[in-house]
Amino acid sequence: MKPLNSKTATKVNRPDRIIQFGEGNFLRGFADWIVSYMDEKTDFNSDVVIVQPRGRGHVESLLAQDCLYHVNLQGLDHGKPVNSYRLIDVVSRCINPYTQFADFLELAEQPEMRFVISNTTEAGIVFDPDCKLDDAPASSYPGKLVQLLYHRYQHFNGDRSKGLIIFPCELIFLNGHKLKEVINQYIDLWQLGDGFKEWFDEACGVYATLVDRIVPGFPKQEIDEIKAKLDYDDNCVVQGEFFHLWVIEAPKAVEAEFPADRAGLNVLFVPSEAPYHERKVTLLNGPHTVLSPVAFLSGINIVRDACQHPVVGRFVHRVMYDELMPTLNLPHDELMNFADAVMERFCNPFVDHQVTSIMLNSFPKYATRDLPGLKIYLDRKGCLPEGLVLGLAAIMVYYRGGKRTDGVAIVPNDAPEIMELLTRLWKEGNVGHLVKTVLAQTTIWGEDLNAIPGLRDRVVYYINRIDEVGMLNTVSSLLDSEK
Image 1 (cartoon, helix red, strand yellow):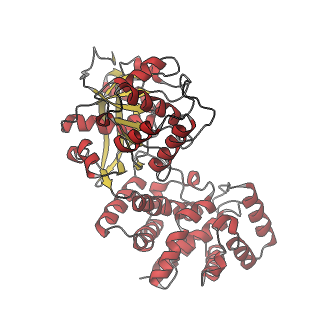
Image 2: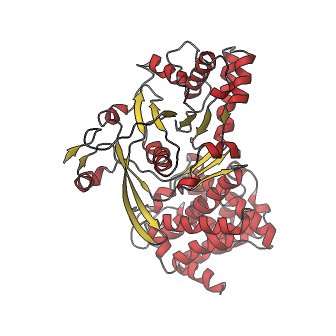
Image 3: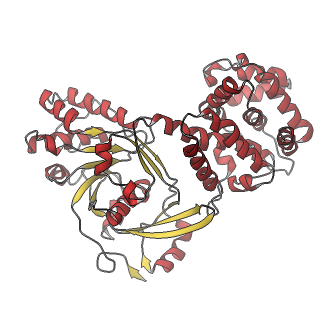
């Protein structure tokens, strides 16, 4: 087995045009993988310089391999299993600004630099008023970014052609809007002047993005087998799912500079990220939230098995395609393609996704992922979406705890106040009172759901049916009633 480095594997030298804040699995298995394809399929011709955003990081292992590593993608592609490997050679070097601050600032002096990509976790885009311009470096990611931008502005004397295009990938809705807001807070705090503020506003662009790919990361259990297959001692392998999506809220001029579509990639440049965020939450997270209690109480433990089950699989299909999809406002073909891709992701033969892992904090999840669709469906159709209602009843039954009929423990997990409430209500034993009280919790739902016509009675009905005939028979009766 060969060591993996630039002597044993091909590494092309390209111009450094991308600064990437974050060396973690997601960016290496998503953004750098995308750059690799753009370099291969188009004239993009760009390398990436990774900047370690925190004092403690993992760039040493990358540097030991001359920043070469493989991405292993697993999943289904139009029903066919995929288990592919790709050598990623687009990372030219890594910089730790905590020990290489001068090298970090020198990135701003490279005239060909054009893009900034980041994933510093949801907590990364924050304003820290204790950050100072002369810190080496500023502690927050936005503070470091402003240091870099201001140095570039000064070095090139405010040249408008030297602005940067910034794509945050943090899992925050409208992440670009938030990052731009924080950048302006630092400009004001550090009194960097109107000239720099105008340069930032006019020469740079900070664009909201939505990213979607599950990237578990380093395949610890399979690494020996993978190394043998690759014939490389690669200690930086990144494992992820086959599906990928990057939605970028930016104008056509930016799309022209970042030619992902010409490389055949699922990267969309759109006027607004909002409907795609709504689509993901509704069609991916929404079905997850209700299939989990229904599947678990039916004796099914794995998401894939639930989707392939002759009864529960039909339930999942109904919720996704017949109840949630009609509540969205994107073109039908786009919604169908996305829903089909979600179903393939749920059925990934390489991932045993436990339904119980989705059950954490189910009430708040239902409030954000399923309740909006329930209300829109009722408004548009004039009746309740019975699958979503059954899902809500199933969550309440799951929160009773106890054991399944096969003896497996039911262990709900939510905020202490929610658990205390459900525990007390289930001990009282009055299902009608329980449902009425839970639906009235404005701290969970933001409103009193008892005001939704018919909802309380249908939830009571489904809880009683589950107790009388079991979850699986309850699901079957619901599906049979719609034939």
